[in-house]
Image 1: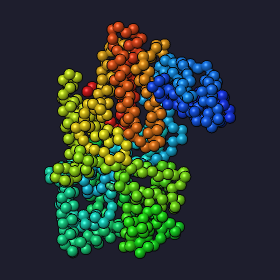
Image 2 (image 1 turned 30 degrees about the vertical axis):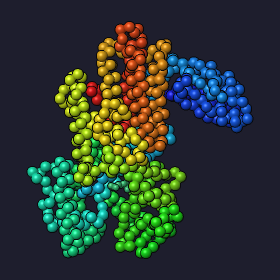
Image 3 (image 1 turned 180 degrees about the vertical axis):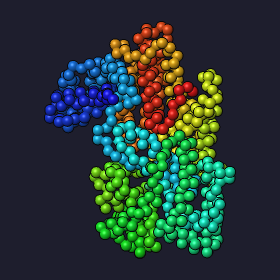
Image 4 (image 1 turned 135 degrees about the vertical axis):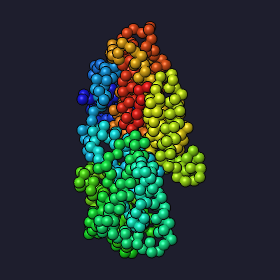
Length: 589
Ligand code: ARG
């Protein structure tokens, strides 16, 4: 693994050094380097500096330019406007840097972060005995991408699927199952996910109906909750059946999503049961939580109800029961103490933001979170239908996730099939690509908008070949792969001696920025910026391909090789970037 300094970071360093050399009184100053249309880069930092030092910016800029050491990197530097520096890089430096990336396999010259730590990421957390919905889809898709991105940057990542597998509703479910023991069996022993969910659904509805209409059943259900919490073996065994059955269903959905979830990472609410009492005791003893109207509560100056009174976080209810907050606080203790996390990341619906704000603040007061251990909610917005209202079917019921994924795959398969003959795809390839394109479309639509914004779920738009969609990126990738196949004996080889056309420079400079784009995405938990980077990459490639013939007979052999080299590096960068988003890139499409 050989990491490569990006052109931008090398230039940044040279300019910063020249700034300090020319203006020792400035101390360390940021040259504020940006990509620019006029040259390759523009440095704007001198303006602010001149103001601070009360100097003439153009004159300072001249001094900085003069202080730059002779370098292979810069072809041309000029002072422009009120005191900007416009920098054009040497073609050779661009090609050599890209060649070093190409020589570094899968990492493309991107270094791992030396300051990496351990992040526990809480994502893909559906609820036992309940259907998954589009919100669970978002958490899974965004969380999975963040896991891949963080791991790539060198972070140790621990995954936690905090499934809803505990609570009073299990008393009712278990009691019903005890009284109707065959209800959780499938017809013909079929154990697929949909069959599992439909039997759970049936059972849920039947037990609910009885619970609402039969006082005696209600009382028996309440006793069941007590038995469950007391760890009664028979009750726990019944509860386990619900969990196992639900997992069959969850795995079938995750499988459809082309996402790997593994059993040891599923640590649901029940996993923290043994810690709840202690968590509450510590909070009470340290005075972080206080008794209020019989409940154990934490208050905050800035969390007020409509009546102006403080709204507490309830860690223990008046009836002695523990809720969602006590579980999350216990999970924080576990993650910090046992998993040695220094970052806790929660990929959860923005509608739970107040809960997490209160939970995090409570954990800080208790000392579980501090300057060395931080928590962050990667909050996401609501999924809306085409009409801009929360996503429902025409009948007004929540859309089933499996139906939605099936439909995406169906539409994508139709898109793939249209071109299949020309590309020469077999029926198996059409089916496989249809799946990758359909699932990719759903994931990309989710990942390409800033998470916290609501987004419209519009399948027509998602599988469109034009615009900012995964299909567009997948086609760009497949097209490059096809060029490389058609090249025959000509191989991708870098030729640093060649002059680059403007579209080649633009593509090359963008390729070189991949590592920086990823570092920013990882630091700020913004997968949409990776999607934006990849979309721009595909656009740069399209321009390059329009303007620079690759396999033309008129090209000298080195030009063909160098352009194939750019094609190859683009394909590898696209492939890597899409893989980090959890999206496949078929070789032929
Ligand atoms: N199961 C919850 C839901 O469906 C999400 C859990 C989020 N994670 C957490 N640690 N509270 O809304």
